[in-house]
Amino acid sequence: MKDGPSIAPIAALAGDPARANMLAALAGGKALTASELANEAGVTAQTASSHLSKLEAGGLIAQVKQGRHRYFRLAGPDVALMLETMMGVAERSGHLRTRPGPSDPAMRKARVCYDHLAGEMGVQLFDSLVAHRYIADRADILALTRKGEQFFAEFGIEFGALASGRRPLCKSCLDWSMRRSHLAGQLGAALLDRITSLDWAKRDNKSRALIFSPRGERRFRAAFRVA
Image (cartoon, rainbow, N blue to C red):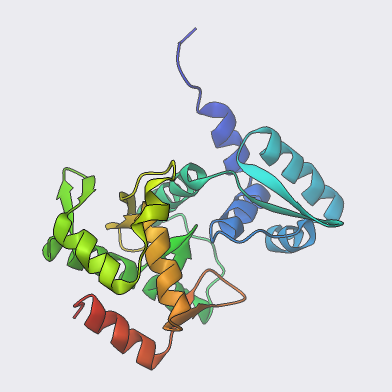
């Protein structure tokens, strides 16, 4: 018998098509109801309840109770990172879901990956932050520079609250559609919060897509010197 973590139970949980659709829906960081997740999975409410119980017991999702209502969310950013990485492997290997539509180009341009910006604009942001030495990237180990700390402070990000968190400040996340890194971690989440608070972009209610207004995109590209 081999020692160490076993990936088989996690792979089995995520490998079921209905559960995979539920997890993909939760990868945008929103907490969803059992009914919403049943709709995403294309299963009955009873079947969805069974799937959700298995995902919760397996440590992939957690319940959030608000009054008489129950919501479900991913158990943490490590689950989101696992899903984004698996999506990248699926994209590279040609295993695609046959649900194309108007949201697909928007998802590839900009989307929410758990709590940070992903897609083409997320990768462009990451590349610019590294190129301008706001973030140092040493073999995928990221560190905020003094120049970067000043830049982000001027952009309106408070570092006092970030320093107290348990998550890494800066972390790279492999983007499934671009197959390159975007910025995750506490700083990635803070940047997304700041972008939306400035009304540069808003979330699509029906997908993980993040829709930039023309003015918002211009401001984004000017602020981060993205071509």
